[in-house]
Image (cartoon, rainbow, N blue to C red):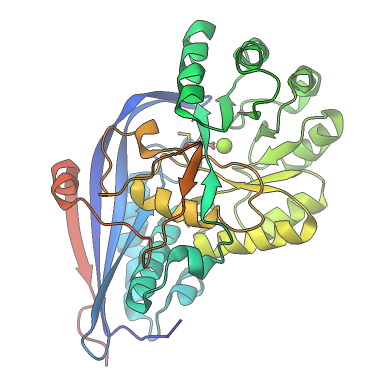
Length: 384
Ligand code: SMG
Ligand code: MG
């Protein structure tokens, strides 16, 4: 990758509103639509060459999955992160995180900026995300995340629909009161061989070990984030109590926390989500350390549009991603995507984009239609 001190740096922040095709309920609440923050970075180098890149911020509307939320992410970007990126002498994708490191937290906001700058850099260099991150496959298996339903019949109908769509792995959202019976019914429906896992989004307590051990009867791939995100010790104890492997999601906020959680026996499998850890470059570092320590990883999802979905598909093509990720077709959540070539699944697999950068084209007409707010920020003067 060439390095460049982009002399002119301009960032457009755009908010879009997209309805979900059906409500998505987790242990922390139900969502019916998304309010998404997109970042478009436009960079001009010393020779006057212009390039642009896109990033997607995965923060939800409320601080429910993690402390970040979309209005807060936009605020911290405008007031604390962009000024530092505009002031930095040298800017390339690898310097974004170090430049922003003195600002604590806000990985989703930082990750969206790094993603846009990485996309711009790679488009200028005619290289794909997959190439840059180190992808070793051209296709990846596609899993689907299924929300909590009011009745087991509704849940079974939804699961059957996804099985018919070809998804190779089913993940069920669970919470106390909607777990054992639901998992039993779904296991009976899909048969013993279909990969199945559950995600509690922190809904259980340390004292629930005996209850969660009942899930051992259903040959699950993993139990994702049963306890609070801070409770690494609790997860380690649970991992010793329950046979089904414990997978961490919310708890893993960096490569360092992941290494510690593995050392403590709290993380038998890792869900890697770039937004949660500050971007794709840190996500690759987590992949590398898990590969080194023999911890299987898979790529999580945050109901991304085609922008984030394309990037996740590239990441999930790295060699350590040995389990199917939450990288479903765009139509799993959205009737129409904002890119012209949305992620689709064929025979249960997603094709990894290979065009330069993130490898998609924006559907500008539709993007404008769903845009609720746009604002432009730029370097006050050309940097020379
Ligand atoms: O993008 O397929 C997707 C969603 C996958 O279940 C999913 N994500 O905890 O893993 C998780 C959740 C976080 C978002 S829930 C609103
Ligand atoms: Mg999760």
